[in-house]
Length: 438
Image 1 (cartoon, rainbow, N blue to C red):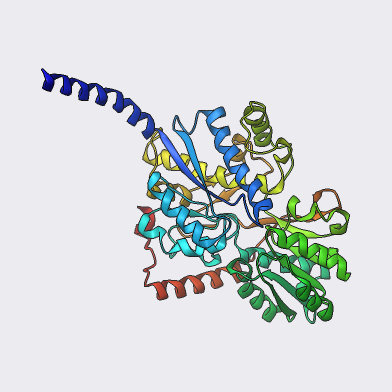
Image 2 (cartoon, rainbow, N blue to C red; image 1 turned 120 degrees about the horizontal axis):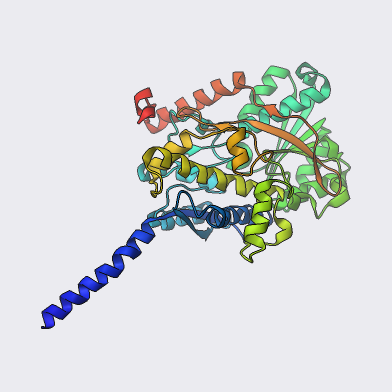
């Protein structure tokens, strides 16, 4: 009798466990590496909030992806590489099928790990510029642009302001950069453009996190560059603008990368930052349909991750875009491997390599005007290099240029050479066309 009862109890447990396991199997898990603390938190927080709110929107509006609910778990890195690696190791075993490291340093540390774990990295607008070459970097996706494309567009823009790239000859361009892998990444492209156009490139590193920049701006004052390129993040950006104001350097001659051109960078400087320019990969504001959907279906329901007034800000929208592309990679993978199924890391990688978001699909997602169409392939892990310049008017950001595209004639040979060098050092064999189809 005791044996019978035990067997019956086990059978009952299995009966209840089976639906629970099936329910769990219908969840696509997204690990979210964040930094809500430390000197980079003013910039990292809206980025993280945008990602969370988009996941909540997909569950609320669409019921997930073809019936598969989206789940997530955050892990605080403080922008530190060692903590980022710890978060990766802790979360990868929970069903993670892609990571957004949210830091170039963490990306560098994970690039050697992900091929063995078969988990792709989305590094939208950051990371290793050479990883645009999917033939070598099979698991890295610098979607929508790299630091080389950013630097290239900035030089194009300065050339246009001067009346032609040839007019840059003899000009002085200072790069005030975060002394880290992030800040150093654009230097090879700027060196290449310097050789082509004959301007003088002055490199001025700033020790992280960038709260002390007096010596850097003393160099700027002494060199009197025609333009300053700001490659900063977090508190470094507002500090740089305050130092520029204090030393009398014209803010209208300053141009930031897309991580140096958001509300936290200028709001404390206000009118003192007026005229400052920066690149932007996405629009901002609350008019896009996807933002309206989030306000209605997430925030108005009391489910918002951060303050309602933050929704639609530059970095909030950037986080939303990153998560949207991650979700679309899952949706694309389901089209091949089975709608309504939870996708593996390898399947999501296929989805990331086969993104094809045209105007019609962007409209269906409510992303019209937020980003431009993006189309990836096995060899092209960027999919787009569209970027605009926007300018701070003392109260808000306004776009001040048309769309630019990075110059592939310069970029492609550099990317291939850097990827081949990396492959040689790491003993990686470039993927064959047959491998790309698998």
